[in-house]
Length: 442
Ligand SMILES: Nc1ncnc2c1ncn2[C@@H]1O[C@H](COP(=O)(O)OP(=O)(O)OP(=O)(O)O)[C@@H](O)[C@H]1O
Ligand SMILES: [Mg+2]
Picture (cartoon, rainbow, N blue to C red):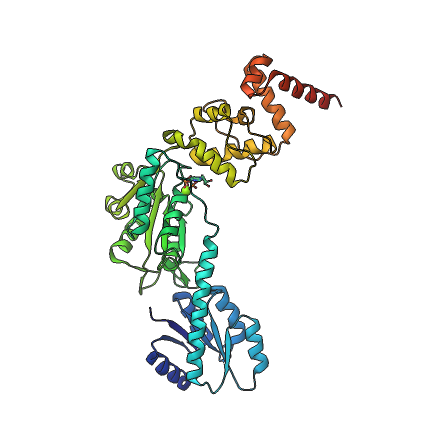
């Protein structure tokens, strides 16, 4: 792709010389004759480097470095100063400029600077993209038949560039799978832009996606790029797409069909080359029947559909998932003993892997580094009741007391049966009860 340079220089003759030379050298140059024009250009376009004159009619280029860095911290800046302005040049470098040249500028020297600067910047961007992705959220596949099919589809999705719709109940790992597909795809070095369509309603979501120009709505005091722009060359992940409102669905369909869009309030067409991943908790076909989702948009987004199974439909994966999640948390004990595992196998897991993770976290807190036993999972003993949040303000002793009390209540005070329910021996339960009554007495 042709590198694009933003040239901020007030002297028309100097600009003319730059543009002629750098266009011949294979660059695209956008000119700004003052800071106001530069500000506008930065809001609307992507650049690979900025060449910045220090003395401009509407302010100092030195202060403008902060604005450039705020818009894109990795955008390299080459500063042009007058011959006696070395202190200013030093100041510019301290503010984050890459390099400086003094006037009159030798275009060949600037070209050499630019080549070097663009190469370093490219490497820096790759490194930053890699760091953002590292450490990747590890994905546990399991060995169930259902997940083998998912794995094959996911691999196919990663090696293609077509839109993918990931569906499944809450907590089945849709978000994690979308990130996995992006990481394995040819776009992995570029941005993965995630948008939750249920968190932003109507106009707000449209503003985020498309961006806007100044004055497009009451509080739009400046031009703003949209997420479609940021996702250019990368992946756009629309989570909970079933919650997108119909009006926006129509606009978004147009983006997918025409590959172009307009920022709110703008007449200029923008293009963005993004790969689309979507996720949903709903059966979108039912939303189509109910008139809440456009059939034509569904055709566009589900060229490939991956349905993640609910945890109860892949219980053979439970031991592997448990070991995986315990290991991820760095818990010293695992795998679980048979009784505890059986308890987990019998639970209905409406919150799927997220709920399993929460239950394990809670058990780890209660067990305090000891081996996890059925007594540490009292929160899932009553089928149908949702698991409490992993952290509560109660102390560990209080949580233990509470579980023992629940077990005794459930077994009408029968210590033998309560001990069995808790997965500990009668003697241990008596010891714990004795310790508790001592604490209460003191
Ligand atoms: N395959 C997996 N391997 C490891 N952990 C997983 C896996 N799937 C889900 N998890 C765990 O479950 C949590 C929830 O996963 P995720 O957010 O991807 O679910 P989701 O399907 O997007 O849920 P929701 O519909 O509520 O947004 C993750 O943070 C992770 O702890
Ligand atoms: Mg999700």
